[in-house]
Image (tube, rainbow, N blue to C red; front, side, top):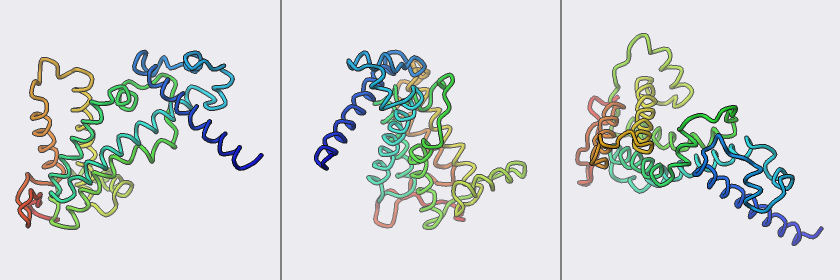
Length: 247
């Protein structure tokens, strides 16, 4: 087979794979992840089920592809938000990244539910999802690392009981950061997704009306928790983020 023919087949496979995933996303929006069906996807695309299995051998393989795509999309949103706020100090970057994650979730509620909603019965995400899943968290780790290496990062308090676990988490996630900062960062990251989940899934209805202001206040509190302080003026007059009691 000529290289030209190989190229045509490769492009066709890419196009069919994209069409399968797009139809699967429509099913997620309509039925939820637990009801995702390869046969239903094939039927909507006018494909034989046996043909679809050549692209995704099982429902779990298709779910994994959708999960990786969603994590990559979320990670790209977090990275773009962080890059856009690169010159406004750690607190500004933290806030921008949190707002970028929230914005992605509100634009993509079904993909957010796939990642952070009810687990799909019988499905366990494989290790291949980890690199994509880590992208958004690595942006936050980078913010704390820059603060620690630059203007300073305040060390949150840490109980003696939690210290061994905090040391282990630091060794696994960010060996160059204090265990105190890593433990509180993990807690704050979980709280961020709790805030976003409440909004995406409707728990804030008739509770929080000005959600933009509420969210900015909440993530400002989280920034303080992880060792960043409230915005201050940087050396060039831009909002800074110099930490008190630098480590």
